[in-house]
Image 1 (cartoon, rainbow, N blue to C red):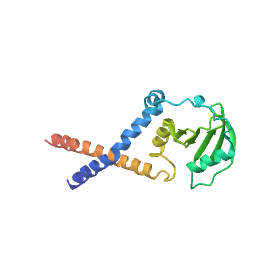
Image 2: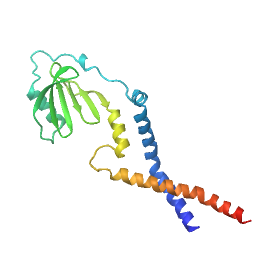
Image 3: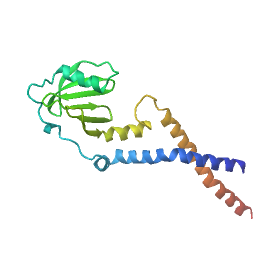
Image 4: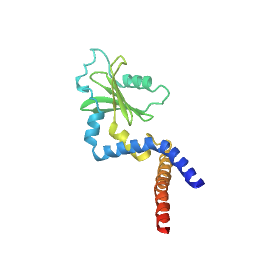
Length: 189
């Protein structure tokens, strides 16, 4: 009887701990099976970076400008080299550092701060125009790791999976044990 009370208590507390992960893993699993409807529901539109106005005449959008923007966005980080590449079909300057890509459009001077999970667009004055979350990456990584980023490894996901196993086994025991006892008592009569 003490074992049954202890299991009920453990099962209840594990339920509180595990329930958010069960819901999120279910949602992310639904995304992995049906990405289009989930992304259509989560994505609320994007900006057309081809419609940015061109930089005023005499304004230089060069490597020094790109490094200045990157230094403003990432003040505590040593910046890498500036690379010239296409971004969404437009010539741009890329500065990569500390998990960020600072992308400056050459024609407009508008810039982006891009990470693994999001992209923020800014005008020349530093006003944020738009933030886009890469929901596909967020949901997939959360489904695999249990959270975002790889700094903690898989410890929380492992602890959650062990808690789910104990939760499931204790639930099976709590469900079957009283029925097994009733069955045995009926047979004994």
